[in-house]
Image (cartoon, rainbow, N blue to C red; front, side):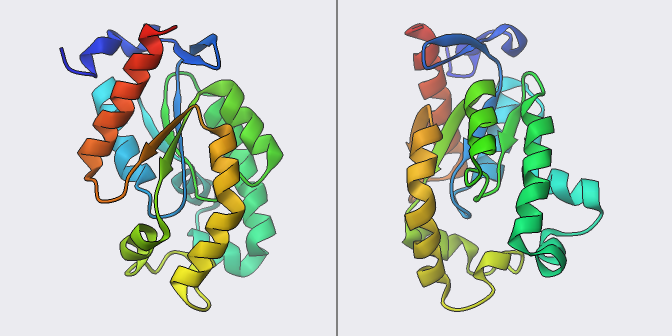
Length: 195
């Protein structure tokens, strides 16, 4: 039996989170370039759950892209929009959600992520991030200065927050999306068996 099959019908599956049952959603956190969207889509297919991306939801709600929001409202304006989107998305039952890299910055975001789903931290090195985002033009926080240096500063501030909110930590360096997703599925199945 493969890892996905171990879940049975996903709508009846309760993910154990810190000893509590009843969590039916999986929330992916981690830095930019960790593969949250790609892995999230793979997981959603395997679990037969709807997939959501918080950045895509913000763009859908505003009708503009994230760089434009940063340009007009600054990071503080974007974080407020992100908080509103996460409040709505995390309240949905039985979803896979890919969050933005800075979603863990606000305490209220960390609270809803922890309380409403199983949080998976996709752990990635600075070198791997730099390789994955080097051609991206939609990364407002990397617009100025050396990308690797900026990624390092962001990781210093955010890594402890990712770790604090995570129920499961999965390394992604040098691994393909399907391998990371299968690792997450194994961890979820193991958590279910031990509950």
